[in-house]
Length: 100
Image (cartoon, rainbow, N blue to C red; front, top):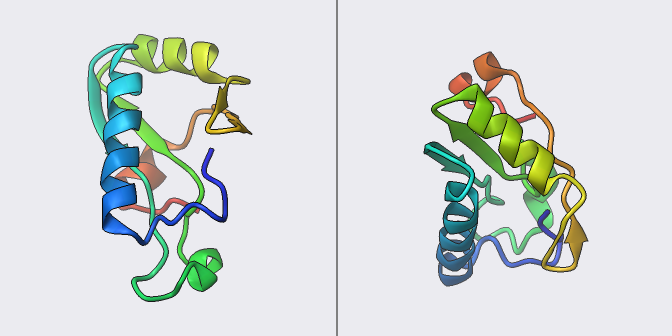
């Protein structure tokens, strides 16, 4: 969903992107949490490969039905010129902050 050239380390870009994702994802139900991992500060994107989950967006919904609806509707759509590949992620890994 996120291109390697997107400046996620830029605070303004990150805030705008997070706001857009949150707004769009909220349309599918009771959104609890949005996680968008970022490269290490000052890395210029070079360290993106060592930060787990960079390039992915993680959404947590209060109800599995809402998450399933989001997955069905978002999978295959294009966002910012990139195709979205929506899938479920293990709850235990998400809760532990393990986004690999």
